[in-house]
Image (tube, rainbow, N blue to C red; front, side):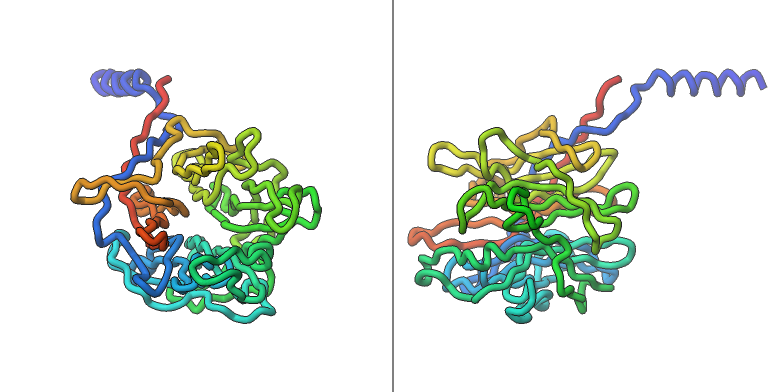
Length: 367
């Protein structure tokens, strides 16, 4: 009996002597990218912004934006959300169907669906997206188009719901997150580019892009990110007043966050937009938060300057590497889906989706 007590005391003392682990800081790095992880629309389609979920069928389902390539970069008026499948989160992916097609100018998202993010909550699948309506016109000439401001300023956030990633998807007649009808609001002109995750209490946290009307039409601005929380995946969502991912004096500092909750913190990969004179410089950076409402630069803030390394060891910097979407499997981030593109000698833009292996180093605080 005495030996047992002594042994238990020794174990207890050893446990007390060990440093207690808190919520870890993450250092996010990229592994090498395989050729099979590139999903392109070839000569006919521009691909952008993939998001991934695993289905009950054991397949990996990617939802992504696509539009005809010939007219130019006309996503704002001609994008649709399509669906592809693979046996692996790293591809190769094969087109299956169009998940959210055009459905008519009379619908808030009837002429364009774009920038999907897909999630499974409580046994159902939720496909959050940007949608808009408008005249469907290409402004300018093919290859030298200008943005269609009617479509851009009709951007709103919606969600479609299904029992399977194969659909059918139930769409709604109203956005899940509309603009705030107050000329001074941060999202008085546009709500777009949702990112969502489930909070520990079961509520849904959303971080989204808002465009205010403090600057002249049609551009409006500034462009910021805002926070909203819903009791259910389909809302209603309560908006919070303060923007996040901001930098003093900058009117468009960030874009395309992906948020998730892991090991006691909300975490985000965000596209950072820096301005040097008239140049805009893009990179991927890392934020974290204790409550999902107030965000700070993570300890390891910088992730990538639009660079990754191919499996053959060749390193490449892209014109854009953005729309980050983290794919989590068995509780761990395993891949970062990004949209990437290059410009050829004729300044034609070639875009694709890519799945980048993630290397996460966890740094626990010493107490």
